[in-house]
Length: 211
Image (tube, rainbow, N blue to C red; front, side):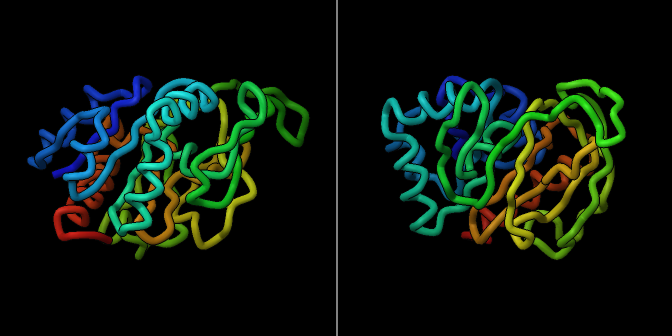
């Protein structure tokens, strides 16, 4: 059973429908007692980092997630949910994140090193480049195009925590992880065969009792 964390800022419908299509049981809940009974947790996210952390802290969900990870439960963050796994973000003022991975979210500048402007947010399909193809979420997955929507990206990362990247003027950490903590900057549930394969890998590993 996969627990989808409902903290008021996630795209719960599309994620839950994707798990249905893959044939995996799930529960959507904001109650820690419900989520504690699951085998793995999925943290979606749409919106601003600071607002999301306020929402997680309101009922102690931030500490709950850290405790579940410390106890070995797999956690997978999607889009904003992935950014929340890191140490901080500059969005709407410096805000601390969950601190489970090394790095911080910074905004795309909108101007390349060559001086030309580019659109922010980064919105559309981009090719994944697997830097660690044997990582738990990527093993036996074919690289391909996935769908991004974001204005901030993760910088100052540890190389071994970045499993795949994409290029949008900057090198964007696209799939990240360390141990039982994993994340995707894109929306796997909206990303065709490659995205669904990555989501399935998380579900498979979760159903086997961990990564």
